[in-house]
Amino acid sequence: MRQSTHSTRKTDLNRLEERTAGPVHRPGAEGYDRACTGYQLLEPHRPRAVVEAAGAADVQAAVRAAAEDGVPVAVQATGHGRASALGGGVLVSTRGMAGIEVDAGAATARVEAGATWGRVVEAAAEHGLAPLSGSMPGVGAVSYTLGGGVGLLARRYGFAADRVRRVEAVTADGRLRTADAEREQELFWALRGGGGSFGVVTALEIGLVRLRRVFGGGLYFDLAERPDAVAAWSRWTRSVPEETTSAVTLLVMPDAAGVPEGMRGRHLAQVRLCHAGPAEQGRRLARELVALAGEPVRSTLRELDYSESGAVFDEPEVPHGYRSQNLLVDSLTEGAGQELVRRAGPDAPLMCVVGLRHLGGALAREPEGAGAVGHRGAAYLASVLSPVESGGEAEAADLHRRVLAPVAGQAVGRSLNFSFGPAAPEDVASCFAPADYRRLRRVKAAYDPDDRIRANHPIPPAPRG
Image 1 (tube, rainbow, N blue to C red):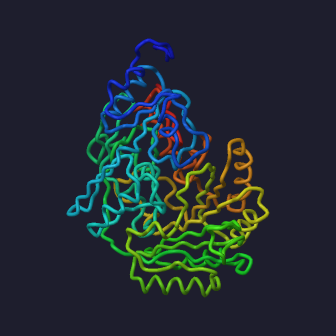
Image 2 (image 1 turned 180 degrees about the vertical axis):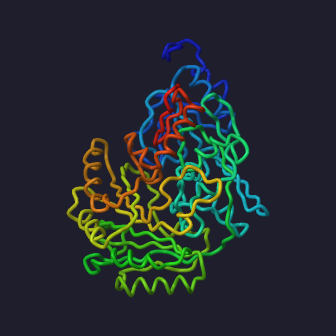
Image 3 (image 1 turned 120 degrees about the horizontal axis):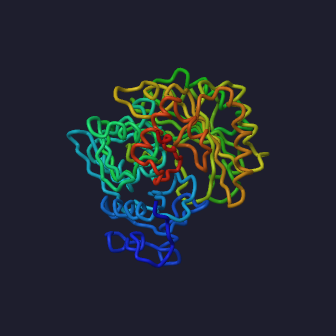
């Protein structure tokens, strides 16, 4: 086997500029740091070369050159979900591959690897259509979907991965393959919920839903005044219709300019909801929640075009460093919710953003020909995220384990989409049923036996023989 080299000989990796339409950046050159950095600022990639791919041919050239030199390949679009850094090797940046083609008659869209959900939502809205998008418009649509995708319309329409009709991907041998229900069926199965270990996806064809408007936004409860707000939300979720997808975020708001005055310095439970049914039904459901939880200090609920759906969670778009952990649970007791509030409150050693997402509904029903999405029967997803600077990762990991301990007894596994940070092999395995994880490893072995493609949450190839 030919060894990797950093010598001056003209290897394929050194000749990348001759083979790509998009620019290639080397360490120390102008543009290298920008190309390596995404929304996640902690531990950026440090590859030998960054290819800013202009199209699938550039991705093929990068993958082939890496294979020739015996080095790994990583992929980055927006960098929101980056879990660990690539040292050496080739980084393929797909941010320039942002094309979107909507077929209004078929209610589908072809979405290139660098397109964000905000752009897909905007393109679909022109035709009265909507994708199963995430809560943050700046997140990459393709990478999000590969991990399953629990979005704003999840309880009504299911996982984003279940709406994938076709995948275009470059595998470790440099081939551009089309995977769908008839072609490359195992690859098609794995890429719909199994993550990015199996190839560099250059485009997806996704199904859209006919939807123009939703009722949604946030209700903000001061936990000092409404200590039972989380328990009230939990009780409320047990009777809401599938049209209602909701979550609650627990956060100690900073006492700083830019934060609404009535919220500064408060420990808040922020209930976010998106109701994909009649607006009046959504208003009635919100009133029922307020009757259980008490009056909020702020409400942003309104009827809105789906093109404005980023306002529901209103998440920050400023890049920063962070780490997180999550658990999928089959139930949420009132005592557990209260303990989460206490452990992640003002006395926590690090800022903690705790999220509880209501699952069920269409998420719990496995469609015919479904992909590798795991743990569909989970009732809630519990996550905790902290802003972290370099050197603080271990402290954050320990704190996150303690914060999530009250729900650990109800855990059925983990979710790929809400894990921001290096994951141990057993943690990645816990995202799937054991038989599905073994199948994913066989698919990896079939398409990337040398483990050339390094994903955020890697699945190793099954042993040879």
